[in-house]
Image (cartoon, rainbow, N blue to C red; front, side, top):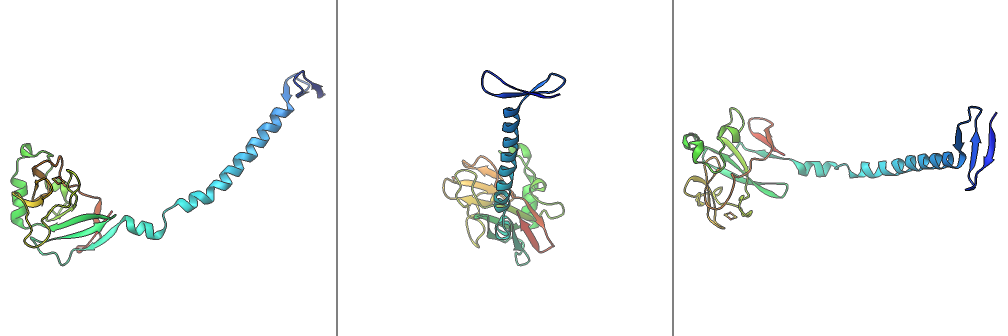
Length: 192
Ligand code: FES
């Protein structure tokens, strides 16, 4: 039979027949904490739901580019996540020039194939942000200085990038960064 005792500290102990004691106050505390936990989860769920990105934020996370009008030898500058992105349609000669460079000569060794998609070596897509201190290199516009290696030239401190947008000369430590992208079709690329 269960009995109830008052301890010296004032808490009550219920004794079951087996003699094991359970403090009633402890039990009440555990129960109260459990309810509090449920309350916190219930209050947090709407907040987490609110923190999920909305459709317009998701749209900003990626951008689609129509590449159908970029002729071989031309490039465009677009914007993705508030950063310039260069999309270049390389000529066969520019592809050959990139493939001729021994990797051992490169500061940041990467082949053109590693920087483009399979079967689409002519489409070179990079961030238009110099990896030195973040200036926007020249080379997308008609007649702009493309540097000594025929790719891009950063006028801020003189970084030269080649036709695969790899750093060849100047202070930039690494190649122009290739962002995540995929071909939605032959003429549309989704960046991000
Ligand atoms: S920011 Fe491009 S060379 Fe310095």
